[in-house]
Amino acid sequence: MRYIYGIVARLGMQGQNHRRYACKARLSPWLWLATRRSDFCILQNQTVPDIIEQVLGIYGHLLRKKLTRGNRSGYCCVQYNESDCDLVPRWMQHEGIYFF
Image (cartoon, rainbow, N blue to C red):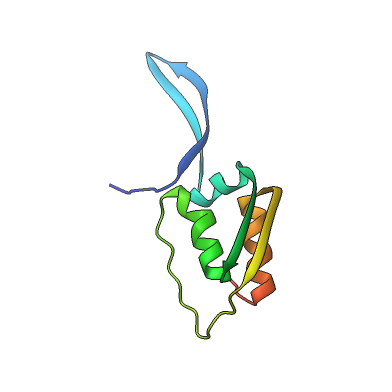
């Protein structure tokens, strides 16, 4: 048995043959949900890792931080009708944090 983790982003019927149905599913990673949500908020006096945790924390998945240097605090982060998936990489780039 093989486990596949993801969120079903699309599900459709492909056809029927002798009382058996064929379906096609499109799986996306949990971070795909961040592309579907836009918000208006101001986050003040936080480090960039704290901003990332607050924005992505609502999706219920654990984030692993492996940062090698300290982070500057005191940022005022504004999200104005921007998806969470656009906000997080923008602030990560600003601080020099990269992910893969």
